[in-house]
Image 1: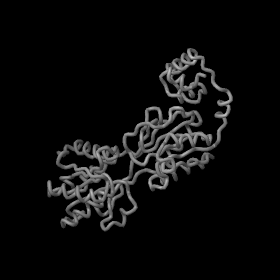
Image 2: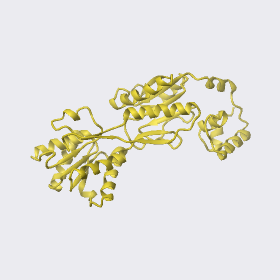
Image 3: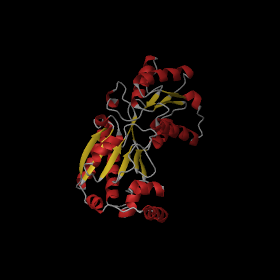
Image 4: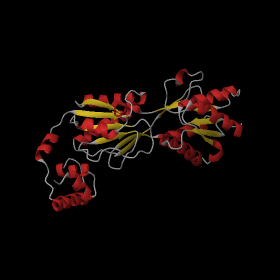
Length: 329
């Protein structure tokens, strides 16, 4: 028997696109419609009316999948998503990657049996992610904190703009010779924060030697200490450091104090993520607060629009973080 997957393969599109062409619930280009209809005719595909009738009835349920729903970043995203769902009379069910050994395909199979209307997938780490979602999903999907493919809407923090704002802030505070402690080079969040900082330095015509003034840690406290020691060994005149996360910022502060450098009088330090320890660290840490609840709200509202057959705008959204100034800068 010819399936919707066979039609999708013949037309060179995803199974969900074939489904959208058949039910007319999402805008599809005329060229794509023609390819799908031509494939249907060529293969003799006949949609299952019973299955279509079953799917046409809304369950009022939205699923939320995260690698670990107990992690603080996930819980804040969930809070935002839940608020929008309540306002629109949807219930939420949850699946944690921990339960399914981080096998997204298995988790999707579990959720699909619950007849959900749509799915939010939230990634705890911003990195380049291969789309591991099953191809035959017949409900809308929104990705949070990662862009998994061109045809799945995404909601992400604007880490690049955060990096630019960090540079502007430190320069306004009088920094003349800033440096950067980055996270792992494979991590997209760190990469974008660094690039934003470097681009702002260039925009203000301030020389910046990437090879000398950027060192890479692993997002841990200890790597922040080690990286700070390396920077000071290279150039003792460094007067500001932008750290790609708060754990490394805490380590950098600790190492600077060990070397009898006064903060912020001699060295200003800015972190990222607004972790819970920032405000009560011995020198409270200036940082950026991620728009986690807002990302959850935007993800849920985008998904609900898709469930109603509307096209989300923008398809791939970025939301700025907020600078939180404290004593370290």
